[in-house]
Length: 504
Image (cartoon, rainbow, N blue to C red; front, side, top):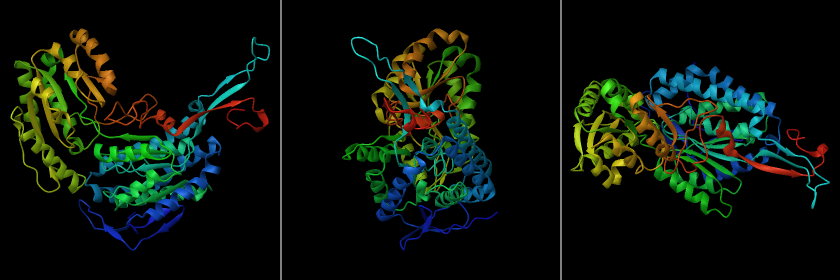
């Protein structure tokens, strides 16, 4: 199956073109023209989403679950075409895109099963106590309800799992919220074919057309108009700290402020504890090299920093890491802009006298080669720029004089998506000291593994204290992500015959 994009927006069931067009920038294959989004289209999509909410937001859980499953089926029906256009636009290999498609459809089906079970509603009932003294208690029932239309911004690095039908969209639709997606200009064709799948599911499930709209990128005013539209009640975003913070501020400045759930970035530090370093430092180093360079390092959970004690075992760890990285060939990055930002990030390290280049390579065009640097802990803590994310295969080893210094160093980190302990049995006392610090810094703490990749399941947290995300109480992955687009409502003395079915 071959797919040729028509380059139009999907606005409440209608494919709409605009005179103003932008060209895609594929890693390989043909260039396609796409309509540029406009404020008028944003307003139209938001109005349709609000209208759809009055039926979709009050539809049965079974109706919404069947819709999520229909989207998954329609995506799988277009599997080969999705892989082809996705690979052309992003340069990602077919296997990666196939795996990401499976994650996307699996997530949709998981959410369908989750809302069918109904536990997410957090239903609570306090029976009336008419004889209570000194005052009677009324009957009070509580249930989670959808907030209304949601805006979702597609991510550059995950054209499927964090974009048009990805986690934010799936969570919002599961909650009962219509969605308006601003597609990412890095993969507009992939966004379009996924929108076709969602549109087909809307038709087969006989749902209102305003349940989903896709507005392609091309202009910044589209994003601004979307988050400031008064009909939008929450925003899901995955992207850069600068872009996310700008949108977050717009949401907060609205006459009616709304929640902005932004996943903004992380360096995901790893702490290599002494016993583990001595026993298997070489294996940990080679594992880190594989994790750091997976997908050219373009993962939010890419472990960019390793904290390693000084001494011979630490020296051997660094040498092994450098050796492993030398064997990694240049990789194509997702966009020219991301490749340019990677080179700029490397230049930031090259300009620091306290930073020693262990492996310094030159990257050109859209390709990236791995780089490795080393810095003493004191210099690292004195220079905040060294703890900022470089999106790509660049690693920094922070050398502590003693492993006992690790808790103090850990306390200096900003909020992270993940933090990792590499430890053996003898490291347990130090690990117990580190764990309370790390759980304050990260949404997910791992032992003896690498954080690259996120399991979609009930217990997963993909989020963390700022700047990892803008809401430390939420996750953008896993079934708990649905809660972002719900709010609690209490029903006091409401007759059962008019209560919503889920709480009656």
